[in-house]
Amino acid sequence: MIKPFKNAYEAIKKLLASFKKDNKTPEELAKQEEEIRAAEEAAKAAEERLRVAEERARKAEEAAKAAEERAKAAASKKKGGKKAPSAPAMSSKDMEEQQKYDEEVKKRAERAAKRAAEDAKEESGKKNVDPVTGEDLELNPLPEEAVYLQKYLKIATTSDDILVAMNSIQKHPDMPKNIVVLGRNGFGTVKVGEDFARSFYATGLVKSDKIAKIKARQLNKIGLEKLEGLKGGCLIIENAGLVTPAKLVEVIKNSEPDVNDYVVMLTGEIDSLAGFFEDNQEIVDHFIYLIDIHKVRERGMISIARGYFKEKGLKADKPVIEKLKNSLKMIETGNIDRFVELLDGIIEKCNARGGNEVSVEDFE
Image (cartoon, rainbow, N blue to C red; front, side, top):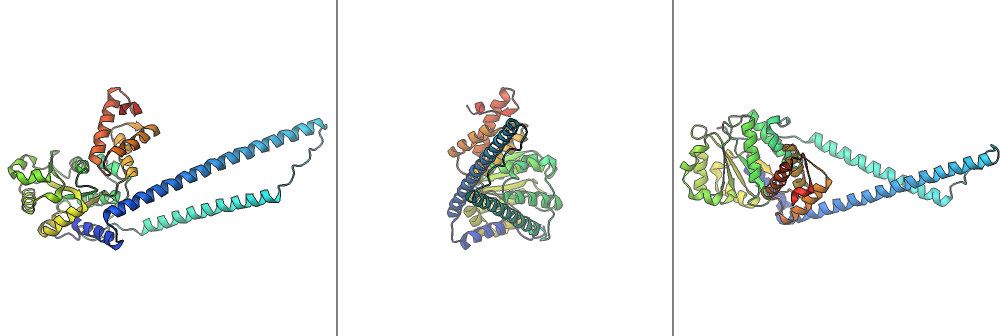
């Protein structure tokens, strides 16, 4: 195996370095992100209130204008066709208010245009690097068969990670396909690994649709003969930072193409995985691809829900989405596994009543 340009561990170290640079722990950054999100939501609500107020003012202005036109017509008719007197000129105070309003609207438009231009510039200057060669990597859309991964593409950073991994793996099929899924907790992201496994099989990147899921502590206790039936499939290890070094080295050797030829997917949180790779330098180059989903918040979880419903051929309206937001309060932040379990129950009830659109009744 050639040595890759970079691996998942180097990506994790870069994330940790950014935490230290800001002198904030991951927990503090998460809190900061929540505060930013709340501020964005408040700003959005304020803009909506302003829009509604402007719409009401516009309608009131149109109504006043229509009333004025009717009054003119009535006056003209009453005076035998004589021209009705013109409307009184706008007062200096009204003119000043209108001018202020027009200037504010113009400033808002200019700020929006500037933000859009900056975003476009940043996006155009952004390069995706092939972790195997270090060269620029053109990101093609996901293959249609990788439908299981589509629901994650609305999540910032995670989207590029997925596209880089899929494009690079397809470009270098002889390199290790092993993946590290970085979650907020040491648990709750096994579903992401499953979706990669299904997509790998659907796109022909692995030979078998077999998927084995196991917790790190359980893996430490079993013999690898238990994995013989997994040949050609995928092994997902939950809370992988707790796997003993010797056991993972065994697993890597057991997963080689000339042995049992399966893909290994590690899921866990940043500190435990960083420590794990630091202590196991001999296996770091076997894990090239990092899928960072540890920053997922409410908006990302709702995006996953929308995508999951679409994946199942279902629609969901606004009341359903609001209901889901309330349900998220009872689930650990970033626990995709529990959230998908909730969605599966809702979908089952929707299917039982023969519907093609999820209803709030399906939550009962």
